[in-house]
Amino acid sequence: MMMKWWQNAVVYQIYPRSFQDSNGDGIGDIQGIISRLDYLQELGIDAVWLSPVYASPNDDNGYDISNYQAIHPDYGTMADMDELIEKARDRNIRIVMDLVVNHTSDEHQWFIEAKKGKDSPYRDYYIWRDPVAGGVPNNLTSAFSGSAWTLDENSGQYYLHLFSSKQPDLNWENEQVRREVYDMMNFWLDKGIGGFRMDVIDLIGKVPDKEITADGPKLHDYIQEMHQETLKGRDVMTVGETWSATPETARLYSHPDREELSMIFQFEHILLEEEPDKSKWDIKDLDLVEWKKVLTKWQVELTADGWNSLFWNNHDTPRVVSRWGNDTTYRKESAKLFAILLHHMRGTPYIFQGEEIGMTNRVIQSVDEVDDIESRNMYYERLEKGYSEEELLHLINVRGRDNARTPIQWDDSKHAGFTEETPWLPVQPNHVEVNVKQALEDKESVFYTYQKLIRLRKENPILVRGDFKLLLPAHPTVFAYERQFEGERWLVCGNISSEPQEISLSESGEADVMIVSNYSRAAVDLKAIQLKPYEAFSIKLK
Ligand code: NOJ
Image (cartoon, rainbow, N blue to C red; front, side):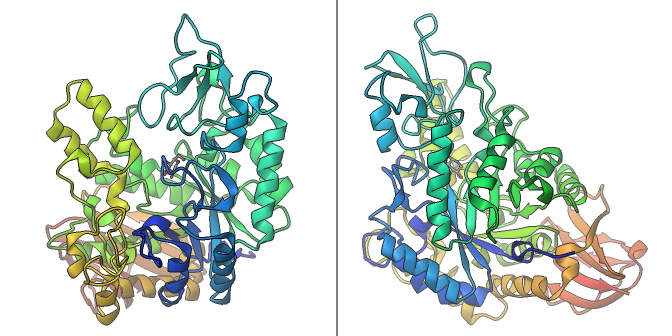
C-alpha cells in the first residue's frame, strides 16, 4: 500500500499569538516562528498547523477573519508569511494553514457590504431571516452563549452566527460564496503550503430553518466540490475539525475514493467529560474504561477506508498533563505517559505547542484574568442564572481555553523568553522550572521522549500501519494495547493513575526488547507487571 506523506507525519500546532514574539509587542508573530524553526526541526515534526494569522479584529483571536488574503499586522506581513513557508520547507516542514470558512468577521468587506441592505449584492453571502413573533427566528444557540441570531437594526432582519455575533455565518448555499472560498484556497495552495486544517467544517451544510447545524444534507457535496476545485492533484493534507463525527461519518470524509479530506479531528474522547447533550461547561468525571473503549472504537473502525488524527489537546482544550495526568508530583511522568500512549496509535499525531515540554494549565482566581470570549460569555450568562462565582471560576480552570494559550515557556527569564515586554496573556509562574531551555539540557526531559516517539514512527511501519488490539478492557486505570504488522507485535501499556498497579499481560506472550519507558525500565515480566504511578512503556513481543 502506498502511504501518503501525511500518514507518516507528525504535526505540531502553533497558536501564533503565544508562540514567540520577535518585535517586543507582547504578541507572538511570524518572524518569531521563523526564529524557532530549528527547534521544531530538532523535535522532528513534519508539518505545522498554524492557527489563524489573517487580518482579524480578534474577537475570537483570529477565528474571526476580516481578510483571508492579508496577514494581521500583529503577526507581520505577507512577505514574512512567504518567508516562513520557504524556510520551513528548507527544513522539510510544511505549513498547514487554518481555513475558517464557516463564518467571517463582521468586519469582513463582504459583511460590511451585506449589511448595507437587502439589495446588496453581498446580502446573500450571509444568512438573514425575518423576526418571528417579534423576536429571534428560532431556537438556535451560539457556541459562545445566547441566541445564534443577532438583529440588524438597519434592515430589521436577523443574521445567523453559530459563534460570536462578530462571526456571521457564511451562506454555503450561495455558489458565489463557494467560488470565493475556492479562489482564496487556491491563492494559498499556489504559495506551496502543506494544506489546510478546516475549522468547524461539519457545520457548513447547515439548514438553519430546520435547526440543523452539523452534518447537513449537502455537507459532503460541498466538500467534494471543494476538493475538485482546489485540492485535486496537489500533494497536500487536509484535516477537518468535526465535533459531530462518528466513525461512519469519518469514513465519508476520509475514504480516499470519495475525494474529500485526508482526515478529521474527532472529539468523542474529549466529549466524555461532558454531560451528554449539554454544553462543554456541564462537566462530569472521566470514566477511563469508557475512554479506552472510545479510543479503541476509532482505532479499529477506521482502518483501510479512512484515516485517524490523534490528539489529546489543542488551543480550545485544557492541557493534557493537567487534565488527565498529574501536573504536580508526576508532571514529567504523566506528560511522557500520554505521549507514549498517543504516538503508538494508528493515525497522524498532533502535538499542541508546549505539550512537548509538559506545559500545564493556567490557574485563575478572578474573571478579570480571563481573555477568552467563550469563557467570559459563559461566566456572565451563568452568573445571571444564579451560579456562584466560585463554581464558575472552577469551570474555567477545568475547561477554559486560556489554559492552553499561555505563552510558550522558552527559558526561566522574566517573560520566559517569549517576549521582552508584557505578554498579552501572562506567562505561567512555573516557567522557572518548566521551559524549553531546561528541557533541551536534560536528556531525561519530556522533550526527548517526544523526539524519540516521532523518530520511531518514521522507522517502524508497524506504528503507522499496524492493527490495534485493546488489552484489559475493563481495567479502571491501565490502558494497554497491542499493535501488529507483518508478523511483528508491539505492546504498549500505561497506568493513568498516581497509584501503583499490578497487572498481568501473559496472553501477549513473551517480552522482547524495551522500546520506550518513562521510568528507565529495562525489562518486563508480562506475567506480573508492577506499574509505578503514571508509568508507561512500549516493548516488542517475541
Ligand atoms: C473552532 C476553533 O478551534 C475555535 O478556536 C474557534 O473559536 C471556533 N472554531 C470558531 O471559529
